[in-house]
Amino acid sequence: MMLGVGGILAEAVADVVFRPAPLDRVTAGEMISDLATQKLLGEFRGEAAIDRERLIDVLVGLGRLAHERSDVASVDVNPLIVRADGTPVAVDALVELAESSVERLVARPRPTDDQFRALFEPRGVLVTGASTHPGKFGFVSLHNILAGGYAGGLYGTNLQGETVLGVKTVADIAELPDDKIDLVFVCTPASANPDLLRACAAKGVKAAFLTSAGYGEAGEEGKKSELELIALADELGILLAGPNGQGVVSTPAKLCAQIVAPYPPPGRIGVASQSGNFVSSFMNYARATGVGISRAVSAGNAAAVTVADYLDFYADDPATSVGLAYVEGIADGRTLMTRLASVAARKPLVLVKGGATEGGAKAAASHTGALAANDKVFDGFCRAAGITRAATVEEAFEAAATFATQPLPAGPNVVVMTTAGGWGVVTSDAITRDGQLNLMELPDDLRRMIDTKLPPRWSKGNPVDCAGGETRDTIPEVLEMIATHPDVHAIIYLGIGIQSNQARLMREGGFHPDHGLDRIVAYHERQDQRFAEAADELSRRTGKPILTATELATADPENPGPATVRATGRLCYPSGNRAVTALGHLYRAAQYRSRRGR
Image (cartoon, rainbow, N blue to C red; front, top):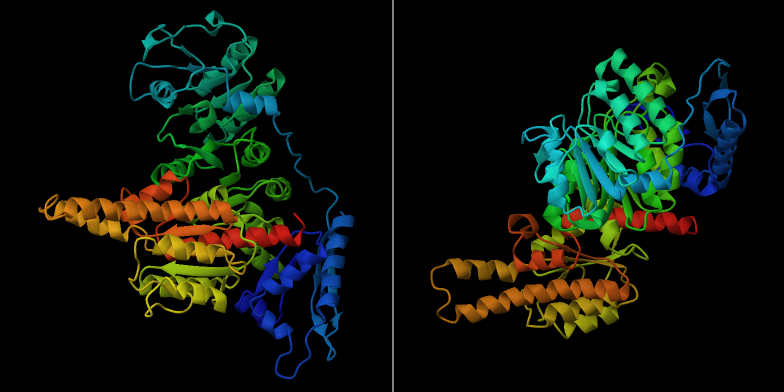
C-alpha cells in the first residue's frame, strides 16, 4: 500500500510511504508518522488536524480489501480530502481487476533441518575434482577445509587417484564408504554433475554445494540444465546449494568449504548472500573487528535454495543470534517478503539490497507505478516487518555486530561520555539528526554525582566531557554512575585508546625504557584495558548498550584500547557517528518489538 500527501508533493518531493497489505492499526499509524510532511496533517496555520484514527480506519480497510479480494489488482483513492473538521473523505477511486490468466509463482518448500545440518555440520565432506594444481578450485577448496580445522571425514575424487594435501583420493565415488559423507563440494564441470549426484546419493550424501558455472547465468541452455539438475536433486533427496556459488562456512563445525578466503572467527552472525563478494566482505569485517560469524553461504544462482531459505534456518539455529543478508534480483517479491517477515519475527535481521526488479521497471509506466518502482516499496516492507535495512556493507555488518553483542535499549535516552570536547559535539549532532534517539538532559542527581569525580571545568551536561581531568579511576567510576542511573538507556563512550596512543609514541621515541618511560607506558596501556573492560562489564550488569568508539579501531587496531574491546567480543566503532547509526538500528528494533508485544 502507498500513502502520500497528494498533489505535486507526491511526485516532486516523492513524499510517499509503502507497507505491504493487509495492515494492522499500529502499522497504519507508522505510515502516517513516516511521511516527511506529516506536520501538515497536524494543526497547521489555523487548519484543524486530520483525524488520525479515521485515516487509520481508511488505510486498514483498503488493506483488508486487497487481502480479501484476490481479483483486485489495485485501488487508487485519489483524492482523499480532509474536511474542515479533520475528517478524511474519499472523493474518487479507481479499482482495477486482475486478469484471471495471471500466473502466480509457486514457492518451493524449504529444505529440511536434517538437510541443512548436512550442509552446515556434516559428518564427512567429499570434494569432487580435487586437484594437485594450486590454482584449481579442487585444490583451493580442499586446502581451505583443512586450514579451517575441520575434524570430520574428508574425501576427494581425482581421475588419477592422486594424494592431494595428504588426502588420498579415489577415481570413482563407488570406492567411497557408505553413510559416512553428508556433504559433497562440487568442483567438476556442469556436464559431469548429474551422474555425480546419482553416485553421491547412492553413498548417502544429503547435501551438495556446486561451484560449477554454466547454469542459469549462461543462457537458455544453462537454464534448462539448471532445471533438470534441480529436478534430479529433488528426486534424490539432496539439498542443492548453488550452483555458481562461492562456498559454505560453518564455524561451529570448523568448516571452511569455499573457493576463496577468508575464514572468519566464530561468532553469532549468520550470513546469506546472492553475491559471493559480499560473503567475503562480511567475513573480512569479522576478521578485522573480532565479531565473528556462525554460518555463511554464497547462494550463487539460488536455483533450489534461496537466501530466504538459509535465513529461515538461521532463525531457529541455536548457534546464530542475528541474520545478515545481501539480496538483489527478486523473482517473487510476495513470497520473499513473507519469508523474511517470518525470520525477523524470531531474530534480528539486517539486509542490504542492490539492483532493481523486472516487475518494478514495468510498473514505472503508470503514475502510481512510477512511485512504486523505486526503493521505497522495499523499504516500506522492511519497516513493516521490523527488518533493519542498511545502505552499505559497512553499516550492515556493524548493525549485525551490534545486535549480536549488545542488549536492546529500554528507551531512547543516550548519554555521550568523552575524554575530549570535539568528539562529543559531533556525536551529539549525529544523535540529534537520528530523529528518534534522544540526547537527554543530565538529571540533576546524576550531574551532582559526576561533579564529585571531575574537575570544575567539565561540561556539566550531555555530552559528558571529562575535560582532561581523569585520574586513575575516573573513567570507570563515571561510567558506572551514568550506566546505573535509571533514566539512562544507552551510552556512547568516546576516546578509548588515547593514553595508549601516547604510550606508543613513547615506545617509538628513542628514549624508552629509560627516564621512567617503561613504567608510564605500562600504566597508560593498562588504563585503556581497564576502561574497555569496565564498559563491557557495566553493559552486561545493567543490560544497557554501551558502545565504544575511536578512530584507532582502524588506524591502530592493536592499540590496547580497541584491542581489549575486541577481546571482550564487542565491536569498537571507528567513529562516534557510526556508533550512533548502529545504536539507532538497535533502538528502532527494540521499539518495533515493544509496540508489537514481543
